[in-house]
Amino acid sequence: MLTNEGLRREVGLWGITANIVNVVIGSGIFVLPALVAAGLGAAGILAYLFCGFLISIIMLCFAEVGSKITVTGGAYAYIEAAFGKYFGFLAANLLIFGACLMATAAVANAMATMLSAIWPVFGDSTFRICFFVALFSGFTMINIMGVKQGIVLITITTIAKLAPLLLLVLWGSTAIVPENLLWHNTPAISDIGKVSLLLFFAFQGAESSLSVSGEVKNAHKTIPKGILLSFLIILVFYISIQIVAQGVLGNSFAGFSDAPLAEVARRLMGPAGITLMIAGASVSMFGYLTSDTLNIPRVLFRSAVDRVIPIKPLAKVHKKHATPYVAVIVYSALGCLFSITGEFKQLAILSSASVLLVYLGVALSAIKLRHLQVANKKTFKIPGGIVVPLLASITIIWFLSNLTKQEMTGMAIALGVLTGIYLILFLFRRKRLKIVKT
Image (tube, rainbow, N blue to C red; front, side):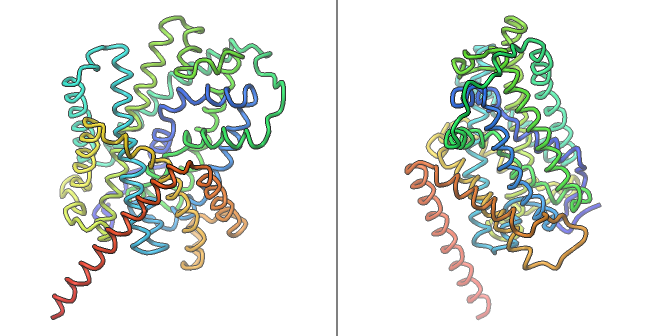
């Protein structure tokens, strides 16, 4: 069945759940546990609980708005519906170029670098370029063939990336030393806040996963359920990994900042454990890329349909496969180009702040859309009025206030440049309309 956008609703509950889990559980979980231990020691679990609470209230906003705005585009579509084309333009560009494209290039390079530890040929620049071209070409073909094929690949990689982590948790739980989990003191709230700010970024990604909203079956119910189910899975995995790693490594945990889980696996399984964790991290990064190249082209497509990004070919849908094939090709090509050139490094600092601004836009959209739309029994509604969206907004502003001056300056410049581009496009459109009328 085709939607008004010309797309097919073929993504079910487990598909959207796998898509979110696949993006959120990325390469960070292979490194961050040691940084949490360095800041809080055995009490590191507090950061996960605190961070889990904060991301939960933000995701509740996504669930409410996502049940109302069921077209393709995710966070961009929510913000555009609530606040109009200017804020939609900012959200689309922050999401595509600030938050996702640079992260895609960074993850692709990180994956190639990690694989070079097993196969040195990945360190050769020519082979690396060929690898990136083959990788992104494969993603392009699969995602043009259909959203169903893309979701199948994501589901497979999600299972593959969770398998070594699940093995680590189950095996490691038998080797936990209880004394390693004892708290010698209770950390200050300020310390928990600082570590949570760092850990928060391990919970990012759902904003891009919801870009396939226009292809979700029974979206009013499926999207809220998928969000809540996926973050329950993520939180259980994260806390279990932290407890096992702390229980096995004890006071030496923080000393393995580069690869703490590899050290846990080495102690449990010997040298084979290190290989398993490197393979797991590589699959995890591959999984992130599979989701990203499925999700973000939908934002490009929707913003072109709304003429927020005035490039008409991006709004084309494949006649046979019902996919936004031009947007898929363009995004994959850009991801490949940035991966090869490495130019993403100078813009990487904007990625985290971009995500936070998009989250703020969605939280405020939840408040705005409650007043704009007539109540619909089919849509999900957060209990307690606007308390949760307000709390989420305050939380995000607090996070933004903790950015460095360099990050704030970079974000302000980016917003200024995007505003200037929007004004130029607005004036150009108005001039064209006047010409047509005369």
